[in-house]
Amino acid sequence: MDRNVNIITDLDGKQFVLINDIRFKGKKREEWKEIEEYLKQYVGEFYEIVETSEKIFISSDFPDEYANSESRLALKGARVRAKANASQGIPELIQIATNEQISENTKKKHRNDAKYGWYRYDVRFALPVYNDRSGQVERYNIYFANMLVRHADDGKKYLYDFLGIKKETSSPLES
Image 1 (cartoon, rainbow, N blue to C red):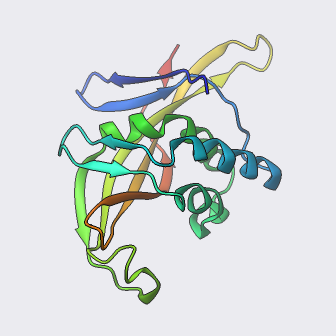
Image 2 (cartoon, rainbow, N blue to C red):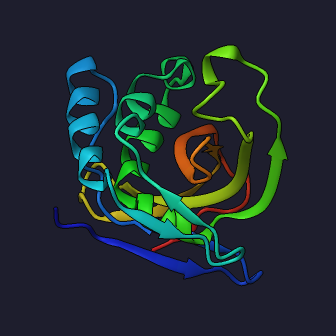
């Protein structure tokens, strides 16, 4: 699929993924099925986190977890649309992940798929805000999220979900 995504460095030297298209509104159940189908293009691929040189694999359970997780169902308002459209920048979000945090697995249901624990990373992405009258990009809102990775019994790390999506309170990017 054609993607319009870039990695940008802000004035503080922090990276974020600039997603230039709003393809998904993220409000309807049918649309989340479309997002799940969209994410299947990444299954079987792996991407490297630049900061740690860790390879993160995309398994067949990722699209379903991303589209149907409890955390996604709890999202409201602009954060639903943000998660929907963040799906376009999965490879770049993995690449810019920072601030690795490790925790042990505590749930029986993840005994094998997260045998060696969970990894959380910080990621940032920006989405355009359009002017209602002109249809032109007015600014970009920047969002913060936690990228959740499971460390499986095969020794590989697999992307699991993006959690805690929040709009940054700093000034949005002007176009």
